[in-house]
Length: 370
Ligand SMILES: [Zn+2]
Image 1 (cartoon, protein in one colour):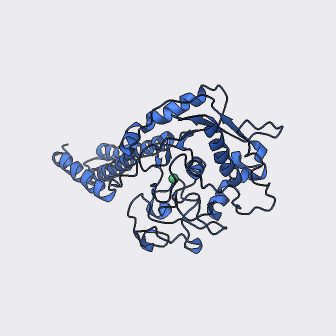
Image 2 (tube, protein in one colour):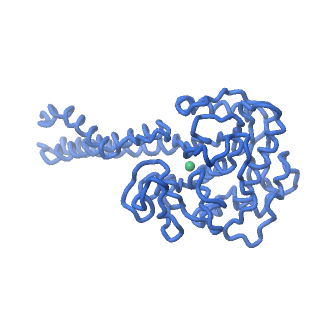
Image 3 (spheres, rainbow, N blue to C red):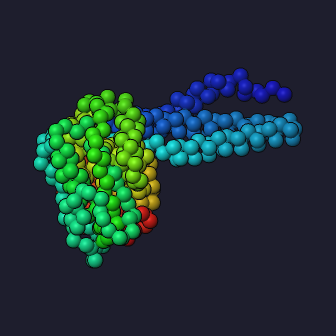
């Protein structure tokens, strides 16, 4: 029997694609990498098509002339649901979620190689038995200890200009900020810091568009350089003293590799935190559907999560009803020291540390437990 809707299928599908694109608009913010937007758009289109196919099959079921056709329609609906499930699982596994970090405001953020404004001794939440900050931070050589190593970070000098002694001190600052903020601060000897001794030449583009176009390439090359050291590690962090990627300070694509300008300890810690399941707090990630993990660090009005970033209103943050896009719209939750959470944007109020919601999640991550 001829499906009466068949002739209109193509037209209906096209309308569906338009409707779904409207419902899930491609984020136009130029600071956010295009791939994440593309994936969102693909999900949107897929959702639209799936909804349409389900309606079509439902109509077919209703108008079916016999049990054979009804079975066909049922199978059709099942196939659509399975297709969607496969797409979601594939998207999750591939983990192609980009985190291009927020803008560098030249007036506030020092240029690479400039004075670092990293707060190493920031008190962290729920610290009663905290080891003194900096215990393992004065040295960037592997920690020699009998303690069980829980976390190993390999730092790689990328396109490094000048003597590598500058890289050594950058790593010390980077590792210091990281170790003094994560739950392993109570057993700093369990963090192993490794350094690549050779410069990884990538020629990272100096402009943002160039970086966007070469993101995967850059990440892969850092990984190659890190692996060439022949030592096992959990995360590779490429550090450069070149002012790369225009207004972008650093980025990661959740594959265990991060790149950042060497003065930006906050950015690398922030990026690694995504690996551990934390969301950005410069957007209302949970409410707006940008969350990596909707059960972790949502913006919370009771700790400043409703404070908007310049140019936006509280409507874009906790308790609001607007989602202007994946860009710097909020200031993030406050940390117990009164500054903003590490998961907020790069130039939010100091001192920087994790907010209580981030902390509650991080202490559940096995590799961060002493
Ligand atoms: Zn982020």
